[in-house]
Length: 225
Image (cartoon, rainbow, N blue to C red; front, side):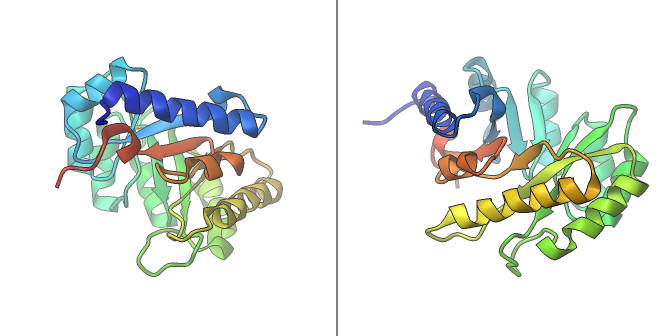
């Protein structure tokens, strides 16, 4: 039987609830980020009415268009960010960037930052895949240290990853959680956010400490071509 948006959202919320209960965590400790690439403002507004408040976008022009159309929603940038587009992104009021992976990008965000801090996460290429962006784990500490020292308006608050696609996502999520713990200890600052887990593996991510799951098809259905 075909399900609609209300049923899909309720199912995702129930999955998050069960996963947090099994991990001994509060349901409020996990935020659902609806990955809304190629979705229309009307679809976003419908999800918003059903209790989804945060949306993730991969492309700056598309995000800006939707942020203007649905200003009551909170938008997160979850795609690869080019430095020459950071100014437009921040000028549109976007305050969450999940994909900082170089000091040059962080410095660009610092220069363009408005009066309110920008919440940023290091994108970690946990599997060392050539096809993906992100800092490799062994370079995460020097990069985080440089951002904290040189970019005071970039609120570095956690880590994000897109793990390799295999049958054991838990091993990658566990490595991310361990890396987060190591960075917190070495830097002496809290990294409260772990952005990891998607439609197919959000339970495994939550079990490993994810605080943000980026869910697209499980909420909106198959992506339009």
